Amino acid sequence: MSSRTLLWSALAVLAVSALLAAGCCPLLPTGGTTQEKPPAPAPQPAETKPAETTAPSGSGAFKVGDSVAAIWSDGNLYLATVTNASGDQVTVKYADDSSEKTVSAADVIPIEVREWAVGDKVRAVWSSGRFYEGTISAAADPSYTVKWDDGSAPSEVTSDRIIAAE
Image 1 (cartoon, helix red, strand yellow):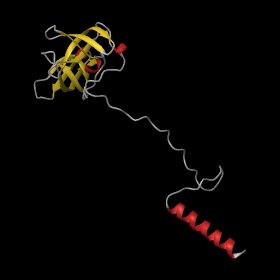
Image 2 (cartoon, rainbow, N blue to C red; image 1 turned 45 degrees about the vertical axis):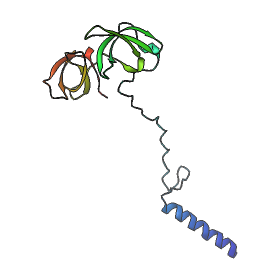
Image 3 (cartoon, rainbow, N blue to C red; image 1 turned 180 degrees about the vertical axis):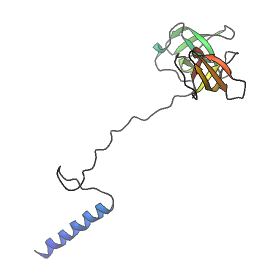
């Protein structure tokens, strides 16, 4: 072997050694003595968390008669019923005083009647029609006991007056 060939062979051995030391794994055909590197997992879409008052996108999300949680001018969510939906605007009638207001669809959250489990963090309607944060402490569908985060005495609330906490 010529000195040039020996030099290149030595450099190749050093390069491979450096790669192995850095954690690289050689890939050999099936039946080789070195374990093959597993395929990389497929990239997952980034999980996005909706804002507190974000409603499903699209104006078709709301229908007349839907029960919803809607923002009032004080910034709080109140129980309401959809009376009109057009484009990105939704007209709601608030349950506490029957006032009507047209608001952005982004300020309305649909109430999806579902089963809740003990320990679920929720926002539920208290006697004023306003949604308050709490935790489900007992479940007997369709009624749930909500332990309020503000320390008020627990209340029985039906599933048509509960939405998920943020």
